[in-house]
Length: 244
Image (cartoon, rainbow, N blue to C red):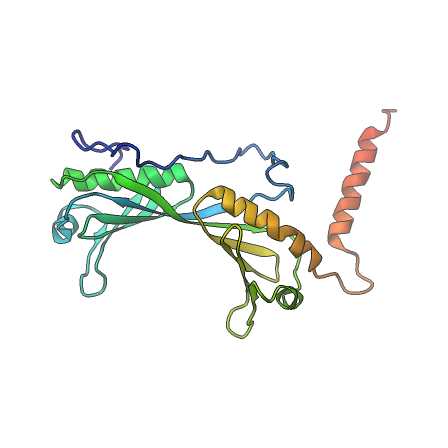
């Protein structure tokens, strides 16, 4: 299962591939033109679908392939897993497949191709058609607590907050169409995007709102973020001083 291409005679259908967006740089630098907040949400899961364009015998796949679960009384699909990229596929007898667990668009496509290759090696005329990313989940931490009650009251048309049922506030953004789970700790989960740009834009849209409803420290306490900013300013001043 290490190859990334289909077996000979199983080409990918022309014109059906999604453009793969490169992952952001990992050298620690943040492009403030794209992320004015200075925070980059990290993708945690990508759900993609692909059409193998052939009927499949799931019992044969479960019997001959490794790391496959199939219990038709519980679920109509066979569940296959691979370690690299670490993903899970739901394989249906219709030839449709759902791949979950990848953290980049490129890894989602690579994993889907590996599953297709495994099925092709079992004798099925599997193609690789209509690959499409259906959902992306990202997360980040704004590093300050948030007044969820005030946010829910002020943005009642978009926000739902019922702490007795769920500890987070559910914010349904219209443009881009993203659902955000906002927690009092400052941790944010974004889901529903089909492009990473949508995840990034949704966070930049909500960030000013989060700062507006930032929970301030108790009277007499120092604001830790203000302390950090002051320490950074002092460090910059120290660097600017001439050497003795």
